[in-house]
Length: 254
Image (cartoon, rainbow, N blue to C red; front, side, top):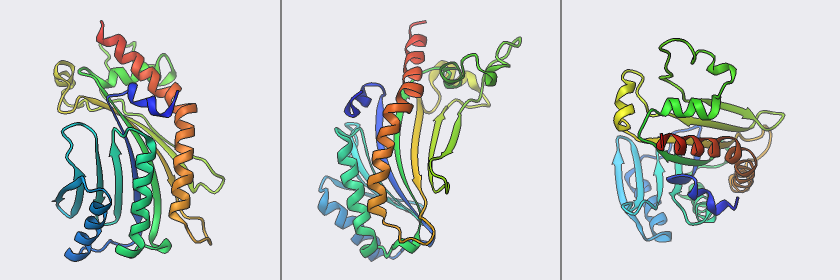
């Protein structure tokens, strides 16, 4: 499948980049405003600035469902696009933010704990998310062995796995599928979808700096983006995305 066609499989598609730092990031007013002002100059439509606790955000207006965002937290810098027309848009924005942070936030290679590239998908389903995930991904496998007991019902199923992709364990992939069904009252979502009607799939490539080497975040980011796309096409889409889509479609017509 062409990479630009993934949006046809889900209701929302998003590509995020996060830089996780060892030290706390600057919290001075002038530094924060200057950082977001520079991003705003590059992307003038990003003009919605706000604060939540000690986290700061700059976003585009999002009523259309497609928007850019950037975030500055106490020890994490984020950037991404929701429903981009092309993956390259998110990659270009992430690279731009990575170019800014050494000069505007004082983040150098010593300060970077890890770098994340995440591809996320949301699937709209007004029903029991746990049952959909279990049926799509567990099937008749051993983890679903209790489902045939009298009165049994799956009420919590949000599988997550982390896989090392390198011998030194510094390149990792994380796959998680998140149900929004509440364990305390699964009937709530059964009838109305609960507070969030989306099943979420998150696929992250994380890179930790190599010991004894100067970490180049831009070079690593480009490599992680290529790897994420490759694994999405070869592994994640056929093995996870399509079974979820097919199961949701079947249940909608029952």
